Image 1 (cartoon, rainbow, N blue to C red):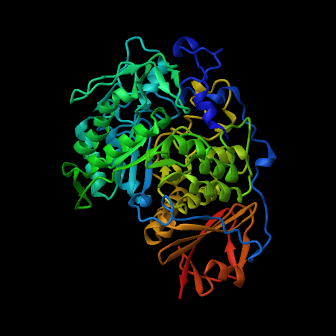
Image 2: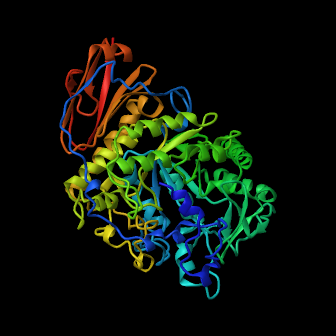
Image 3: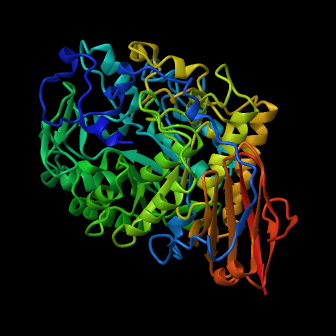
Amino acid sequence: MQKLKSLLALSCLCTAVLGCNSTSNQKTFNFAPYNNYGQQQTASSSNNVCHRPSDSSDITVTTRNLKLTKNQNKGCFGSDNKFCDIRIYQIMVESFRHSSNGAIGYATSWGPSNHNGNIRGIIDSLNYIKSTGVNAIWLTPVFKTTRLEDQDYIYDRLDGTGYFTSDYFEVDPKFGNKKELKELIDKAHSLGLYVFFDGVLGHSKVNVNPISPKGNKLKIQRRCRDWDGRIDKMSLVNGTCFDNEASMPFLKEFVSYWIEEFKIDGWRFDQAYQLSPEQWKEIRLTIEAASANKKSSYLFKGKKVQPLGFNVAEYWSDNPAMIDRNGFKGNGVTSVMNFPLRDELVSVLATRDEPKKPRCAQEASNLDAVNKKSQDYSGSGIAVSFLGNHDLPRFGDLLQRTGNTSKSGKDQEMFNAHKEALSFIAAQTGPMIIYYGEETADELAGFDNKVDSGCSDKMVCEDHVSRTTGHVDNLTKDEKELKDYVSQILNLRDKHLSLSHGNRVHIYSDATVYMDLKTYKNDKVIYALNNSSDSRNVAIKADALAQLGLQNCTLSNALTKESVSFDKIVLPAVSGTFLNVECK
């Protein structure tokens, strides 16, 4: 998948509104809500190649077919880094939850939600969020956006996302106020939840306040840095870019202000390629310094601590070398969202996002190859695993597109597939993200049939259809069972640190089965995914066990505690299995 091409190539909804030159061959700045490639495509849900494969054959692992590809002693692999334990719940503020005791909300934005989310709605949902097993929340931008006089409705929608801010040091009154935001952060910390904000350091709305509280200035320009370090003209009439180098004092004050004054634990950064690796190093060091500042300390579950000082950058590409060049070279950002792994995962379990070019029913063995590439990042670069986000179709909608699940809503196959997918994310070394609603298999019924020339007006374009209204109460029996399962496997990462910190040795994979041995200090876990519609049996023979260093070990199911034999490991259909390894 080349999602990167969609982000860099301009797709104009309206040339008059966006100021686009559709005949230009030059790459131009773009933003997700205008990346409506769905307008030119029609879903092809009848393509049988997308259907889940069927294989009931037994697997015998010996030294002859033992894979033994590895990730070790780099990034979070074999590391004590505290960031590796992070489990984030991502919240799209404008679409998530509304409380009648809070701000009015936006009423309009991109996507199919009610668009009246507010800070009070998040506060009221924190106990639910904690119950999913996460230990952190990520809020999409909460900073003030001011409507321009006679602004087109397209920009009214864009304002709700928060990604084109007008004031970096104020809270959007349609979401709430600083007092409520501080209440949210304090309550989250009391529950044991870290808080991350979402920041855009390369662009803003054209009416942005360029003066910081300390008098630092944004230097505005109409050109942004692209992936290759070149400068491209901003394509949005109501958007602007910065002279990043001249604006660094302002940007550094921005990231430190919310840490020191509101005690947030770090940042997620949007379209991170708009800053150079050298500039990201300055930002990272600023975050670390602000987090270490004694004035930033706060109470976390009743204990005085310093903010984590974490940052994760969005580099939307399936090319690890390009991500590395823009993010990790020269010790730039701390971590990146693992788009290459996410793209391969949905291609194996469902289908990639573009319905016009389906890539589905891929072999599970592909996951080993893309996982191996995480070893190639410079320095101590960390990859953060995830299944979906606010700019991608929900996993449930991708499943419906394959024909493996009902198009009219949720069925048992959808719940099983979510368990399988989220188990894989939970088994990956390093931080992870759950996008709100994944824990209950949220989807938009019939979405795969709505990707057509009217997707923007219908609010069903590929890049915003997942912005549904948050669903945290009145769960069905199946939804609650899935949420409870997610809580189990996420909490399993606290007991078995090999899942989040472990070195990885790949045991075996074929078209439907994937097996890793994760090892951290004395903790060992075997994780196995089975994407077949049939159960499969795996026997790991003595010679393979010896090569893996498991010849004097026993197995048990990490969730049920039931004893398991190396000679017959049963992998249920469409599932993920966690096996605890105890060695003498």
